[in-house]
Amino acid sequence: MSRSARRPKGGSAKRGGSGRLAALGAAQVAELLLWLLVVAVPLVVVPTARDAFDLPKQLVGGGIALTSLVVLAFAAARGGGLRLGAAGLAAAWRRPVVRAVLPLTAAALLSIAFGGHPEHSRAALPLLLLAVASLVGWSLALPSERLCRPLAGMLLPAGLLALLAILQFHDLFRPFDFLGSEGATARFGISSLAGNAGHLAAWLALACVIGQVWLGLRPAGKRWAGQVAALALSVYAIAATQTLAALAALAAGSAAVWWWRLPRRRALAGLAGVVVLATLLVVAVAPLRERVGDAVSELSEGEVNELLTGRLDAWRAALHMAGEHPVTGVGHGAYLAEYSDAKLDLLDAGVPFYREHRQPTFSEAHSEPLQVVAEWGLVGLAALVWALWVVLGAAWRVGRASRESGNGQEAAQAWGGLAVLAVLSLVHFPFRLALTGFPALLFLAWLLRRADELGGGAADEGEGGEGEGEAGGGRAARLAAWGLTLLAVAGLVGWIVHARGELRASRIQKAVEEVSRQLVARGGAPNQVLWAHLRVLREAEELTPEEAGLPLAAGSQYLLLGRPDEAIEQYRRAVELEPRPEGWLNLGRAQWAAGDRDAAIDSWVKAVRLHRPLRRHVPPEARSEVTAQIPEAER
Image 1 (tube, rainbow, N blue to C red):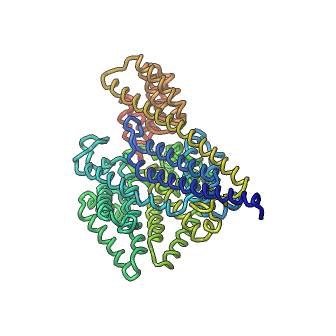
Image 2: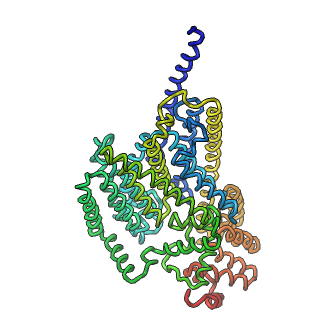
Image 3: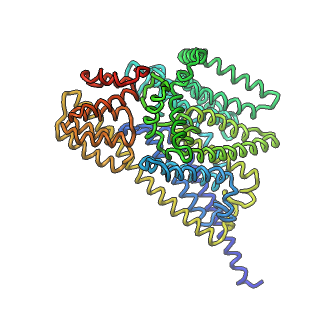
């Protein structure tokens, strides 16, 4: 063969080597970003925002996730081994992650097309696309080993957040005291950096289960003392929150972990150990012991809604929405907008509601399957069942391979993680919170990727790792990869713009509410301050038009200015977006000030029916008339 004929081959080898180096570098950078996503995001707090906890975590976590996708897509475009399918896009459907996610995405988009709440659907769409892109991108472009390692890092922030929660529980340090001195040590005051005791407990449960998989194993084997300490702190913090759902998820996940980690002859002893530990925990922590005692008493008396702390209301509302819109649901992201109307319909039908709610409305169904049914309808339910079938098939494949190899670590992580997410998903919403959502997506990406590797799909085509450099698949594949790179960059830029707007709007809303409350407490507010508030509220509404709190705040400014007609317009906008009881209450105030007595009474009746404690805020001269129009069973 001539020298000229050999040159292209050598050039190809050189490009292949550079491709492998590019793939390796991109994989390392992407893994580092995933570490940040798991370790740093739980610690993010912005006290100046109205939502100081979940919103900042969501915005920062989304930026990190999109940056990792940009890195991976760019590596694919450069011809590295991080490819999205050597056989081309036509072969993508064979990947477990694509088979699981594609029908769900189609169902969500279909619900948006036929839903009646475009503002809420548009606001929720970026998060849906982010979750889909992250799950698919990580699972297709990174090997399971790189996806697995960051999960083990959850114990580090878990120990820190658990320690802060324990300090709050023992009234030693309360940096975020929303309940006042009386309730700071109560269950809902133990929030750490999660902002909510239930959210904290759910995340700690997932971190504890994953942490047990890695307990005493390399690469974390040398840090076993720190692992044990973080686990102990996390378990105690979950007990301090008295969140029974998280405790049940922790028990189920731990049982699955030790069933697979221990030899079969010792597995039953391990399960018994989990039961004994749970019993000791209940006995040792007095508030938890009282909570469990109350739960047993409520269950024995048939008070299921009390046992569920009112979750049954959210479930009934979700089923009512599904009954009203059975095929495609009320629309992605529209549960909150429909909740109050669903509750009024159920009250009219004589359905009793839990009377001890701290918050009058549910923004989530407190059950992932029921939320899917409510928002996406039967189409969404069918897609969810299919996705669960794919995920369970992936876990079965991982478990079978672990059994054959005699090493149960991967099976322990697969089934332990699924157990904790399954329990949480039934009575909570772990995929709708940034704190729990990002690690849950990473876990599923690892599981689906590992099953793909074991099935031979990824390995056969050499994709997703530090493998073949030039096997990236021709010009068409390169063009597709560059297109995905540009799409990822555009998504990241759009997310940054979106994050800045969301954060600014949240800060404006909090500042206006705090200043207005202080001025009203002092006996009045200068008009120039109120007009300034209206200017910044208009700016915030342009940034987040779906946020009902903004027209609600604007209506209050107009009411303080003595302009009830403008206040009515703003309050109507608020209740159209989300018919919350406080919106109806304030609309009634504006209508009363405008001289429309009958309309005010109607608005106050709705407000009080939705949340009985609001009755004391109705003017005394109208209170008896409002009460007379409320069914006796609801008084």
